[in-house]
Length: 200
Image (tube, rainbow, N blue to C red; front, side, top):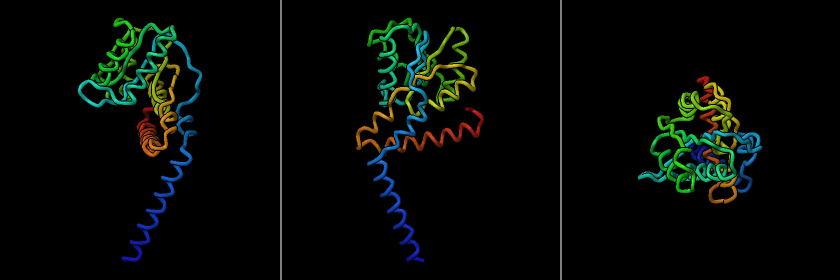
């Protein structure tokens, strides 16, 4: 019994080591690209930006920061008349402050700050959009776009996906590759769960 247990632990150790080596040497950028969908940078008067994480005390996390940075870039390119930030108020309010500090007028940024999941992002934003004519552009991280796009479609909102290179960019630094790989695994589990519930 003890010998069998040792062999099992040895095999687990070897498999884990090989997986870490593989992810570090050849990160699965292809999977993040597949989840992102087409990269055609669509335009539209209404930009929907999904919040992600926050550190606390009014400080947004890394993913929320980059979503805000790309929202600001899209605004500066021109054509956007309204930006809707969707997520918990602890995330969307700091994102709003960031965008306004970047020069976006206060009357352009609107908050949907009651949602706590991608499904709620879609459902609650759909209610806001009943009073806002489209077309709508959806901005979120590359690895999150597939689930977000399909959740919005299920909520009856046609959006033009505009992912940005979040996981793909972080794969560029070998120190972050294992963490990004874990995020992709978590996203895969969430996609399976959403599909099982009929939310995508």
